[in-house]
Length: 436
Image (cartoon, rainbow, N blue to C red; front, side, top):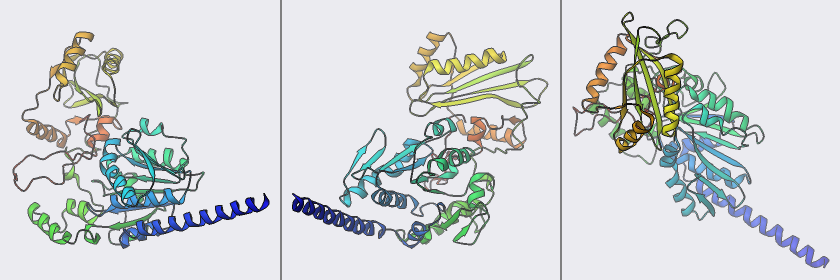
């Protein structure tokens, strides 16, 4: 019996050594697919790391490999990858994960509903979305070894709470690492600028807040050998000089104020008001309500007020919530109407995309009349609205869902299409626009 026990122990040691060598070999193969700038980032021992890059710099392909290698090395641990929405995260990563693990023969179980990948050693990669503070707070309490946040610029002011209140405490038990990635935002301010701004030339540096920052562009991505040619073509097509703010921000990974990149001409100082000094409801105030229907996306409502003695249009209230049902939307509207004694001149709903029947059902159940939003000449109305923003006639509540969206919603950087140079600008689909 003693001989059998010793032999079993020896066989187990041999098996574990073989498995360890196989894992090391597989890790080497996967990391061998990264190029030099990506490898430098992976080898950086800092626990707070940033990738500040241009578009098409190869950031997304790097995260799948780093996450899989970490899962192989750290049994029974959790790795989270964040995006502004679960749908966006799935679009960016899910197919890449399946292709990577399938090509290398890595045994793991995919859960397409939870967007999680469970490895044989018990490690889990979980892809999560958090477009606002409430949804992120639900993910407190997890113990993680690696946290990755994609497209940080699209989170707006909420990113600080996500990092400091949710992610950093989750990393304490495992002494884990947080990685932020994105392109510079349109304004040199806020948390993302604090951790990645302040340096225009260096490829790597330590920010004033102690983050290890790595910058590279599509020109350093060896998988795009035609990058320089394409970039020159795009500059010529857009009429960009070398100091054009959008070119510097999107394609050189440099922070620069680029207010023209915003879809709306919003300015935080010009277009907000102090709610302690002005309350846009009560005697003499009139109101209008807009309802944007969402099913997988957010339900959103905005209420505006105006008064004959005030020259501006004031945001009274804005709200949004993914997956909200009609009764919750109506309760929110009723509460605002009752508390503030609102006087609605008009209530408008976006009935496109099959929403007409839904709104008609709501009207029959709640005795509330909604007019269908007119979508024709939309951009002409956007221009009129932006004109009012420019002269300060539109005032938003600081920190409201609408204000956060409007300060981050950007024009589609691929506009205009070469075949339609006169086409009106589009909203960048990476950014939420439900309240807008």
